[in-house]
Structure formats: structure tokens, C-alpha cells
Image (cartoon, rainbow, N blue to C red):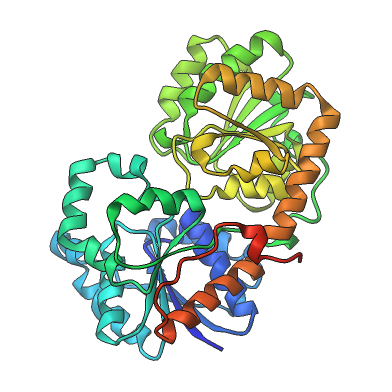
Length: 406
């Protein structure tokens, strides 16, 4: 049994994949018999959403939660002094810390506390050290890396990459710590009993009986909504019966996307339904013809993995770094180009038998490679190596080589 402390800035599901991952990894480790705590800020305006999301995580009742105190002023936000003091108490007696993210003072404070106690810590980069991500606010990140965050990364027991491509893309940084490839996953029980396919439609009558492509993610520039709008405009000329459902919290791109859709004359076929979680999310997946995620960058998309767990074929960009989708025949991987995306969507949605086979292949791939119990086990093995002071951990790039059926 290990004592594990996960640290993340927020557990608000509106923040995207990292809160979903941290909560479920912690829950899987607790279910395996480990003593697991998760520490995060508890913003008052997000408290209700956080509580609702966590009640839907299998086995999360076995995880201890620690709410970090709010920061007091700009100086405290920048250096997280009060947070560091709070973390000193919660970190006492822990065997390992697992930090989720990169660019946040709370993570740097946690790393400092761990180092002072000679406690190993891991950093899950969640795609934040990808060249595309580093190119956003480039000067600010270069300064932050030079002044503080490189030290945090270099002194980690290991940095967690979500796939081999992410690890390769980190190499130019010249990190001193080893990089271990451990992907994300799902709890199969969240997707085994799917609702009837018309469940989501009943809540959104404007869809009628039309088949729909589903986009499920934050409405953020990196998610490629502009490519999706252009691709759907091309697709609609060939497949006028198809609709597009865009589900997710607005992260700055909703207004621009709506203008693009309106300019193409497709507002009546594009449905922006806001964020969907829990049963509503599963219902949206269960009723879709396919999922499309034309991202500019992804570490390891939870939306894609969850779609495949539901038996849904997927169309994703090559920047999602998920080549296993094409290798397993679970969907299509395309370049970031509207015509290529439209063609792939047309092929997948026009052939129901092929779509069904893709969905079955995706479900099998998730079941055999990407489940939280297996991934929790992978993490614990890496922690144990770190605890024993083993160096030179390199990770295993092929999930099928290290994961057996579950």
C-alpha cells in the first residue's frame, strides 16, 4: 500500500481533461487499496460543478480531499506561499506526489515541499510541453521555464507523457528527469450500460431524427473548431441530412464559431448545446453517428477514448497523437485540412456496417489497453521505482506490450 498525494489547480470539469484524469486516476488507485489524497483549490463559483462531477466518478468515495486555501493577493498567487504552507501539512507522510499540469504556482509549491521532504514526485504534463502548446504565450512560458519550472521538471522522479509522440516532442527541452509513457483511460462501468440512442434527442428536439456528428470538448482555439466548421460546410453539400452537435464549455471560441457557421448558412444544422457531463455526455455519445475532434494539439484525448468506449467511430486529426485509432480500425486519422476531414466524415457516416465495425474495434481497444485499473497499476509501478531510487526509467511506448486484457 502506498500513500499518494495528487495535486492539481482545480477539479472543475470546465477546465478540460486534467481534472477528469486526476480524479479518476486517484479513484482507481484508492480502489486498488492505496491511501490516496487529492489537493486542489476550491473556487466558490465552481464548487457545485466539482461536487456534481466527483459524485459520478466510480470509487471516488475512497479518495481523501484537501481543499487548498485561496491565495491572498497577486504576490501570493504568483509564488503560492500560503499554498506551500498548507501543502506541507498534507504532504507529511506521503510516499509520492503526482502533480497534474505544468504552468501553475501550486504545482511548483508542491514540488518544493516534496523536495524538502525528500519525497519523490511525478509531473503529468498533459500535453503542456508539446511544441504547439509552448508556442502559445511563447515568451511568457520561456521565461517561466527558465526562472522556475525547469527546476520543477528536472527534479521530478519522472515526467509522465501520455503517448510516445508526446515523449518525442519533449526531447528538445533536454529535461534531466526521465519521461515515462502512461496513457489515460476509462472506467468501463461508466460506459457498459448505454442509454437508448434517442435519449439525447429527446432533450434536444431541434435535432429531430437527423443523424449527427458530435464534437465533445472545450470550445477552445486548439480544438480546431474553425477546421470543423469549414469541413462541415463541405460535408453538408453532399450529406444534407447530417447535423452537427457541438458540446462543451465555451473557452473563447463560441462566438467566432457561430459566426463561421452562420456565414455558411448552416445555423439550422449546427447545435451548440453547452457543456455535458455524466449521463448526458454518455447519451450524446450513444446517439451520435461518430465523434469528430480536429484538434491542433492533444496529449491523450478523454473525449476520443470515451467515444470509443461507447462503440462510436471517431474522426480525429493527426495532431491528436492517437495513431492507434487508425491502426486498430477504430476510425480515421486525418491531416488538419477541411477537405480531408469532410471526406473522412463522409466515409464513416455513409457506411453503417463499416461504422459499426469501427465502433467495435474501438471498444475492444479501450477494453484491452486503456482502463483506469491498469493505468493506476502502471503509475504505482513507476512510483515504486522512484521510491527505491531507480534511475533511467524510460517507459514503454507500445501499450499492447505492457497491458493485458481486462
